[in-house]
Image 1 (cartoon, rainbow over the protein chains, first blue to last red):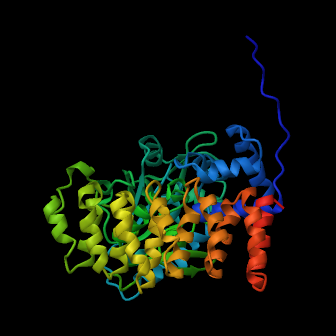
Image 2 (image 1 turned 180 degrees about the vertical axis):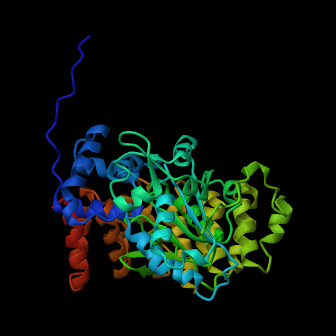
Image 3 (image 1 turned 180 degrees about the horizontal axis):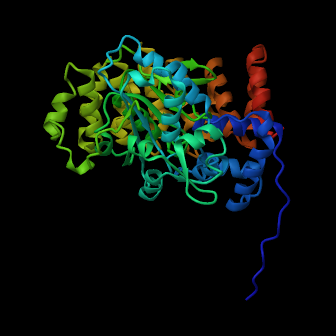
Length: 289
Length: 207
């Protein structure tokens, strides 16, 4: 028997028109937009998928991608195009929007007896909900006047335990200013800091599969949902179901914050886009039924 | 510190069943005066495919956008030829939101839509034919490019042809170029169509 290795191939050529066609399709399916400056990044990943799927050219690959009924290849492509990394104050303009725009909007003409509810899903290893807490404590001058409940959920029990423990290395903490590091973290050895117990205890971590209605039922009257860089991994119908569930769980006038490359308009028209600071967030209408 | 510890999470299985979770109650709740109750009932009926026609009945009279959105999503999950047939009726609605919701829902369906949409390509109403082309253009069905080329060859209305040209920019293969060139000749006095044809041919050839 002769075993022959597959011949290495030169990277496929992707023309300007093919690139434009691909970007339009990818945006329609995922809401993710690529600027021309990302062309090299996108081309490298397409070339990798062409290689992995053993298609012969961009044209063959695009046809395979476009007509595959299972959508499996699209999922592989999305995974390769997105960076699954989390750290404190990632996309911090949204935390800025939270304290400068969203919370003032949610507390306007509202009784201080009503707690403010914020839900981070997926919370991964906790960087996002702790960043929310730190932003509120440090940057919202009304923080002491309100009761604020922060919920944080993930489908992965292992990562939730990491979030509850709150131990982080330098990479996760790269954007935490030294003053906050010394105020809210305890050194636990070389390259390891633990967030203080008060903050760990202030967040309710829970195991939740977002597409299971039984598991999301207990969340009600939520003011703000942070759901960043999760929906891009869902198919179109699951995405619709999830944002409709958010609509149900939010108070009228409540907000959803998505990842910077995600767009609600690709999923539903139930929410109103609102611009706060440098970011777009999505609001359930105040007079929603 | 302002932050409160939220009440400890109750495991989902310990939650009591919501009132009216049985099928008969859910069907009754589809007609509740409260939109939130109707949404909840529709969502809970996702796991009851036998309720599909009741959901279609509700969609026929539903006016709340949020309830419609949930009904469409559930009907996508319950895709069947019967559901497709009921949805197609709304392509003729005067209500633009209902029409658009219908188009989006049909575009999400996978296996049962093409034969119905193929029939609509012969509909006497050119708007319905445009909607049919819009739906076809988004399907994963490998039959789509050939059907769109067929539209180019036989469709008399310029706007329907333009919709097909637009769809072929994404799904077209070199087989479509001859029909695109012929269309340019047929509608030579329509500059916007000539521009669209040039773009589509360029996209198919890859520049």
